[in-house]
Image 1 (cartoon, helix red, strand yellow):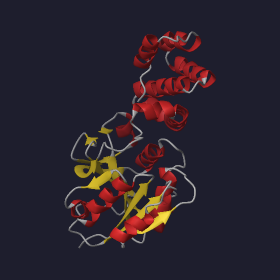
Image 2 (cartoon, rainbow, N blue to C red):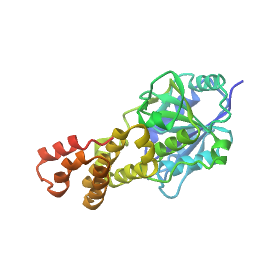
Image 3 (cartoon, one colour):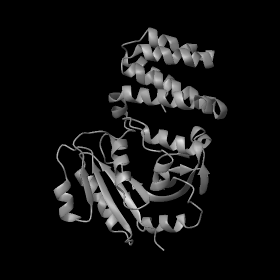
Length: 298
């Protein structure tokens, strides 16, 4: 029997990509689903355009931009079905993805898990299927991006939501759930992640422009999971600190960069070599590139 899904799509100023995403869903050979679009206060709403072509879509326009995490939380709460698939507007579903997800879910007892994960095209797992734990994230046994399938009732009952922060909220949520309960995850590729969208989080220019938010994200991860990193992989913790240092330097916040470096040196005095890059900054572009190489963001 087909599992009824709600597909939540958050969007912002990308009507053409949104239309492509919706088309990939309605072209599925699957009928037990609803589509909710959360428009995060785009400059020009696509509501009438989408309704004209896809009248079955529940289109919600927010009067204030709050970021993708807030939009996803709203979509989850509005969902009529208990299983909620979260998509971005630059995603497209592959042929028969909904049927594949439904059939695969039926193969395990998933009732006690608030989130299941299926791969996007860049998603990598160290095996075909596993219940992912926080050490899998820390040790990078899971890489890239995955499509979350959220069991709404259990997700909300257990107090989960996307953290209301501009950068990294999704990652923090996965780590929290993986630590407390585990996330059944498949390497089955059900979604194409396209690269034609502007302002992707992985874009270097975007990271430089939003360096303050990226620095805060690294600091939040360190604050919440420092002892998990110390237990499972100290080197990854060092990378988090170096990421926080670099992003704070890019944003011009030498004080926070110094604070993160001080804490890093307490863990490992070998990082004393980074001191000159904070206190004796060079205006030379070549030396700046050297700094980027030495302080690798993650």
